Length: 221
Ligand code: URA
Image 1 (cartoon, helix red, strand yellow):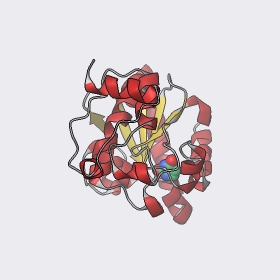
Image 2 (cartoon, protein in one colour):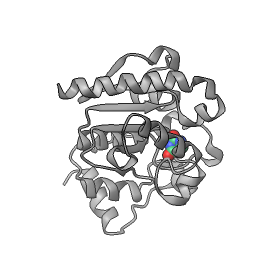
Image 3 (tube, protein in one colour):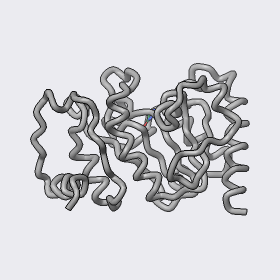
Image 4 (spheres, helix red, strand yellow):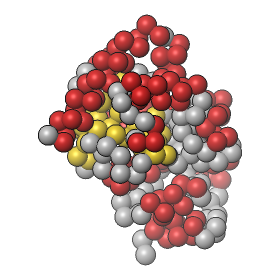
C-alpha cells in the first residue's frame, strides 16, 4: 500500500497520524493523490495535518456539487462562513457566485466547486505558498476525478496557485490555460468577493462567463 493510500485508509478509520509540530512546518514532501478514490480523498482531506492550518480550522472544506459536472469552479480558500459550514462559497461571495452561475444557465448543484486550500487561513489572510503546495494535490485529484469540460478559476490567488504563474489577472482573462494531465481548459475570471467590492467589473466577469460557456460548448462539439 503506498503512503497516500495508507494515510487515507487510516484517516477513514479515524486513526490520526502523529506529526511533530516542527515536521508540519517543514518544506512540502512529494504528495501523491493520483490513485485515491473519492472516499479515500475525502478521508485524507478531513484528517489532513500537512500544514499548520489544521490547528486553527473548525473543519476542512472538501468541495461540493456534481462529481460528474461539466463545470468545475476553483476558488481560493474557505472563509469564516465556509469554515463553519464545511462547504465552499456559502457566504456573500457564494451568493454572488450562485447568481453568476445562474446567469449562464447553471444551477449551483450542477457544477463542482472546490478551493485551492481546504482549510481556512486565520483572519482570511492569503494562502502561503507552502500551504498551497501541501494542499494542491487534493484539488488536482478532484479535477482528475470529475473530468470536467471547463475549469472556471475565480480570482488572482486561485489562478496563481492552480496555474503556477504570477501574471496579473487582467493578463490571465480572455484566453484558455492548460494544466498538465487535465483535458479541460482553464478560464480565469474575477473572484466574487472582489466583484462585491468592485461592481463596475461585473461586466468584464460576464464576458468571461460567456467565454467559458463557449469553451465548454466547444469541448462537447
Ligand atoms: N472565497 C473562496 O475563494 N472560497 C470560498 O469557499 C469562499 C470564499
